[in-house]
Length: 195
Image (tube, rainbow, N blue to C red):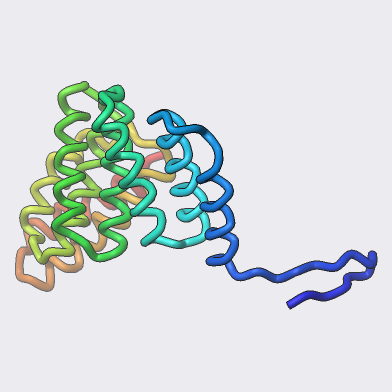
């Protein structure tokens, strides 16, 4: 579908899926056969897909980048970051077992590296994944471990963590776990008050 604007320029409306397919085709011809080029291509595709809400394509491309990074001995922080990214996409797609596997590995790597900023973020994400499997108390235990580390988060990460703690508070209360629900609500309130 096209239309002519006031300037006389013709604009064309192209569905996102077609644009994404064109991007894939363009990227497949550049970067050579080396692992680094393929890795960069997959990251680009993943970012475009994420930006357009194409979760399946994002998970596939990020997963391919992860396989390349993992198979070629990339730095642990690169692999851990991709594990986290793929795990989040898999959670959003409802693939909780796969997501849990990725997040547990990403969390272990962050803990081994002493990454005080990544550890609580990964704990909160893993708690959501466990909740998706109806493992609310297991998720609560992760949130409880993460609570003292949340001061390292930026404002956006604190806001996201607060929402997770609130959701856990509601659900745990519904399940009759009032002490855990109150703890989650208290942490959510602290995150609200934090600058």
